[in-house]
Amino acid sequence: MDPKRYKSLTAKGPVKNKPRNRPLPKAGEKYSEVFNRLKEILDRMEIKYEEYFHFKSAKHWHFDLYVIEYQYL
Image 1 (spheres, helix red, strand yellow):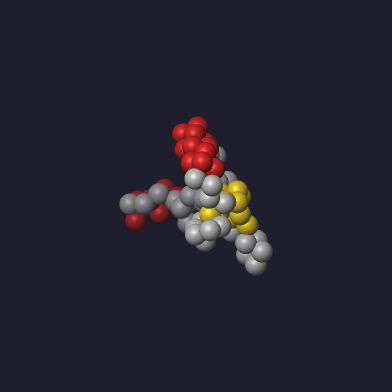
Image 2: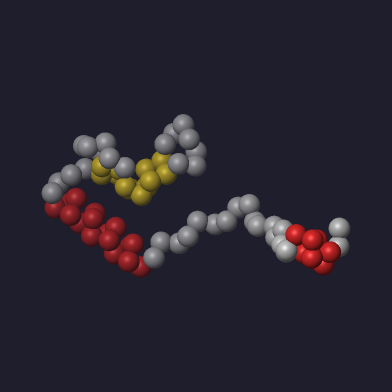
């Protein structure tokens, strides 16, 4: 159907296709500062943690920080 005729009949514009895969947003400067500060605090309190934790069963799941003692992501 002609896009002009469709718009006149429905009062809507043609459907715009969106990309299916959008890249994840980059970490901002504030996020990096807070993340580094959190690591400093955990080091001072001698709490064990692991950076950039990945599950072995799910390939796309990852977390920036895993606190081992409390099992907290």
